[in-house]
Length: 311
Ligand SMILES: Cc1cc2nc3c(=O)[nH]c(=O)nc-3n(C[C@H](O)[C@H](O)[C@H](O)COP(=O)(O)O)c2cc1C
Image 1 (tube, helix red, strand yellow):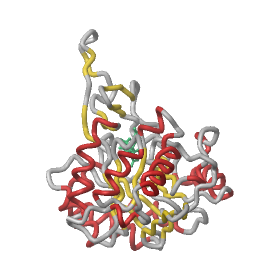
Image 2 (tube, helix red, strand yellow):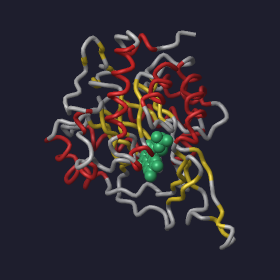
Image 3 (cartoon, protein in one colour):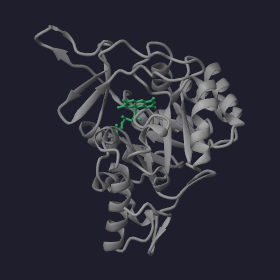
């Protein structure tokens, strides 16, 4: 990788527009796996990627769940971080300037315990330079109050979306939970409420038990499963949602290589996010960009649109 990835590489056009959000390529870093950017600067040039989605931000700082918070599973990772974060004021003062000074396309993931909190977050973030979009996390399974209810009920998901959309001019991406019976019902509801795009999936609710100790491994008992284990589920949901909404769909879940990314792009995703793979190899997203370019050049696909399976 030469550190010079631009939207156009040879005859391959990787640029993506999501509402007013223009991305030089479709590879984004998923929230919670890349901190606020500075944490991974030694490993990856963020300017080579489409955008960073920063760690979920709440109105007040959050301590997160009691340890242990992580457990490895076959082909996956269980996390119960509990949305630890610095809070919106510290984010604006201490974290955002670093991203802004470097011109990094930044999407802020937000979480609240009520529609009022989501609206207030959108309002406080709206006027700040250096923020290019909001991603509403209505899907985290770790929070005992609030989050899980919004993501599993179409009416509540729509209400939160409506409130955020009204409070900002920024593009609003709604991040969907896979822990529902009918993901299309939620996707359609948030589209009707004004979402610019949807991203999916967040983690799948799971658990692990330590048989020697005879107790759950995670301090929170349940956690969110991510990584390659969830990719087939994520791909199936992205395929379904692409075919039931008209807004752009961002694919997330177990993407580790360019082959994974191409599967999501062929399913109809306009862009993809990489999460757990960053924790194993922080250079994975840059390798994915290069792998997608090579595949497209070798197979004469000149636009991301051309990759999509139409049926
Ligand atoms: C350690 C960890 C922390 C996460 N924190 C957040 C978060 O703050 N907000 C959010 O919307 N998703 C969060 N996620 C979910 C990821 O952004 C992503 O949706 C999920 O892990 C699936 O993608 P992956 O399989 O590529 O990791 C987190 C995931 C992990 C593993």
